[in-house]
Length: 313
Image 1 (cartoon, rainbow, N blue to C red):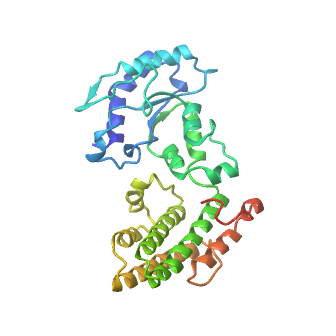
Image 2: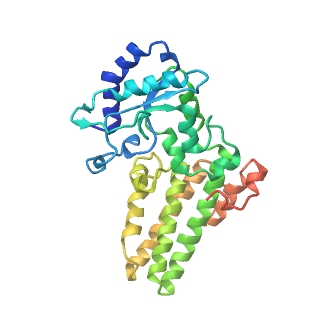
Image 3: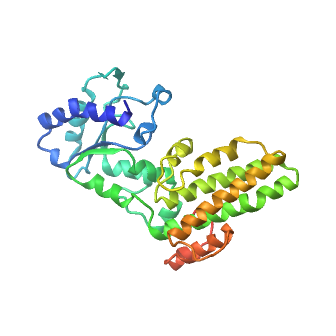
């Protein structure tokens, strides 16, 4: 059973009756779900990942103290802590009276302030540019079981994808890095006999290409160790995940280096085709650098457009 399924089952059997029986007077202000840090919040958990931070549990989100004061919040925390310590063969972690870091009773504003630096989910354009993408992924992953007050869902909806100009700026920067590392520097490193440097170029190319593919899917890239897992599930260009794995795990000797160069060009061609399909570029060529600047030119906000092309990297 996946972590989200376990959490939802635990909520339905024990959490929901507890809230309805003991806190019916504040139920209209509550939201319950599971999202944030942890492979289970992305649906990526397996037997290996269950050796830590895997338990039956869920998050109860509260509005600020003006609506639900500390006394009621503490009563809710106590009630959550008293739920069964074991469920479906899994034990819950020991928790402090104020709940755990990933599960338990949380103030909505405090959760989002810790995750993205904003209590309300509102971000200015420079905050959007600088915020780590994995933080946005963790703020919008998982599942809400219910949201009677609507505050959590409203924030998550506002964060579900990058604003258009931010997306374009991130695309432009990563396209330029793909061009520099893959289309240009990889072969030059090979010609210089610098195999290690060539592989560093491959790493940079794959890192930037993955970022581009997530952006072309209007999806946030999660923490790096789950990036390939998430990449394989994307609707667009997920086929390139296998090629990227080949690039990362193969040598740079002789014919292999030539095959890798053509693989890099193949990924570049796939990306360019998708850029054209989405009408994000006006360039007509196979040079990713030219497409990078074409994408940057389409940014409507002149302040963002005129920032260095790598400003969002």
